Image (cartoon, rainbow, N blue to C red; front, top):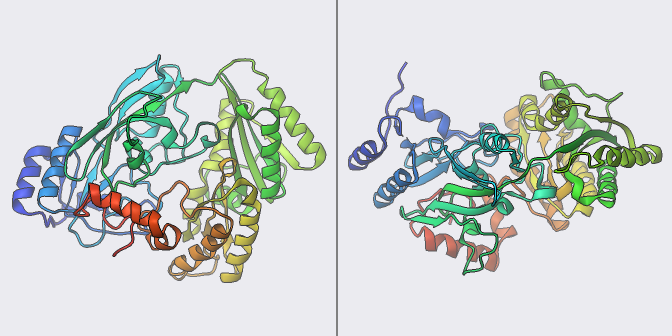
Length: 480
């Protein structure tokens, strides 16, 4: 059944966009636009005047220029996997969503430079596969890589599992192209490792969550494909034990450690309960777990011996109570599935409040201990389910509703819960947004966390590039 067309676009703008983008590039029927107006967690439900789906930078630039001329707000959207409502329009119905999903070409892979040039709408998985087909490796890895795209990943400066070795998206982007809020194209598509000519403008756009422009293309750094890899799941007593195990691996060979992930016993229990095919390959459940991966571009690099030596000492000392090493790629994938399905398992378990926080590595055990106690005191029966990238200090300190509590009542306490966790994070010298962004979920925190000259400098940059406030309004910056 067809939905009801509810476009609030001025007729002249509607006609111009229809002529520019064609029937597949301009969606106005609510049946077609509905999926673009809510986030992955279904926390935010907005409305839009239309969804624009340009197929090229040129189309995107012309569409943005038309919207700018008519004073129409624009919400850039990639794979729509945001955890903080960063790609969701408000409920006014005035904004258009500009989706980059049709801009999905891999343009070039350069073996000498070890780079790939891609459109913003290329999914991370497609980019990984394109690199692998050339015998190369794109090291960025996140759980939503099948749907998250390069533009959105750069706009939020995603980190993911391999940050401990390769850094965040920011470190992997050499060049960038973006459409600015007035429709001008900023071409920074340089493949240079060294370029100190003025301001690093691409770094302003990376992590800006689409508030300064729409990323349309990027040059991404690649690596030689790993020829040796070892993966192990380890049972530990606590986050402190996981951190000690990480230190033991770094002491032996810091360059070998690609990923080091932490999972609480509660969070792992939800994965085993709600995810089909998930099976804990250890003798019994543990209070916490560490997933460690080593890799090398050299075959026969002694990684198995390194893994066995470190884990042997850890088992002997009691630091690790049990461990399993992947003996095949199938087993490796099964171990990684236990880590990657935490967000989905928590979603199926009920309402959840997500805290994407980071603290100095040494403070991680204190964070988990103190925040757990504080949240359990705030809401008795709350399920504390932290997990994440302990190797770089980024913990997803997530809280799931008590079994018998109403989901809506729990969600209504989200600010109380986030503020409780954030105050502990602040005391430990951390950040309330490590890799998910601010979006619209946590804009209220910005004045107290990034106030004074820092927030004012951000506003000046925003006003300089988007004086009319049309590009992704209501994100990052709190309402005036």
